[in-house]
Length: 451
Image (cartoon, rainbow, N blue to C red; front, top):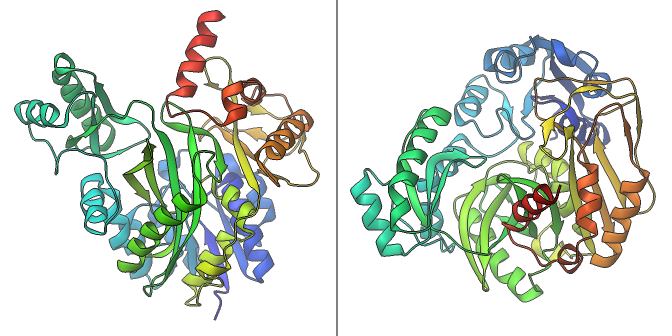
């Protein structure tokens, strides 16, 4: 039986995304918001809305007592976390369940398992998922770091075990650089995560970032929904994603997809998840698993014609998945660009009032955004303001559709990263799909030097 009332513990476009799925399923939605988001679109669109604190995320969207209280006040029986904020917080999941509420996502055990990079790697290796050569576990001291790096072979990268978003990651190109890389990574990890533990992996010189979308029912059944190429990144943050990946053929897709689906089925994983890899010279190397819905999930929805949020809600309600592996037939090509309220070329946040907003439309165009004319983008949260997703019969059509849609988009009053995408679409490497995770950083550095 479907859940009847869901509280969305998030804001912005992802909160709207969940509200829309709820409405189509006949489920009541509850929006929570900080005082800074009183006029936000997700607050307007939900069936009910409740203020849970001041602008600071730590006192509102990250306040577990406030969110649990909001459920009790409104009678919501389940919580959808969206992405970010508390979506991968195992403690939060446990508290939700302890209060007799349903968490729309995986178990606290699986979030905890994949939240620690070393545990995740050990688990995946045991499940037959290929991993990057590296230390077997944490590296306790400098002497051990030198020994591991020497055995793996340079270049190597030192990473925080509790890391994410590029923090606590340092590159050592040769033996002369390992001391500084190890010590800096440890200090950054301690400052950012309260945990100085680090591990070491082989540094691949020109890899692509390929992620496999998986979905499980929590009862030992799971499917994969192909891959997304998320290689265009700045400071380890994704900028553009496309599906299927330009470098992946059908045979490779089926092979790695089955490995991933089998792995999550074996651990009884429930809901949406993404297994992320570095891909180089035909080989996949596991880097992490995200135990939540991804920002870039719409490109997968576009090529498979499924609603992943709807499926999350179904599984959390105790219902079976509405599709099996044989039902998932890839159709065409999709691209997403993340549009931020940022000032180029330095990507400085640019909050403020949006005087005019016009979303592009037409065949194969989807705009996920919480913007409207007269809305003031607050300075307290992430600068992502919109996701433009296009779908075409093939990659050239999707690229042409993206260029056309970007030309129709109007966001007046604040500066955005739209000019970056116009520039990228003019690049031959992008047109060919020939890029690695280092491509965008190099492109931006060259542009800045020219400017």
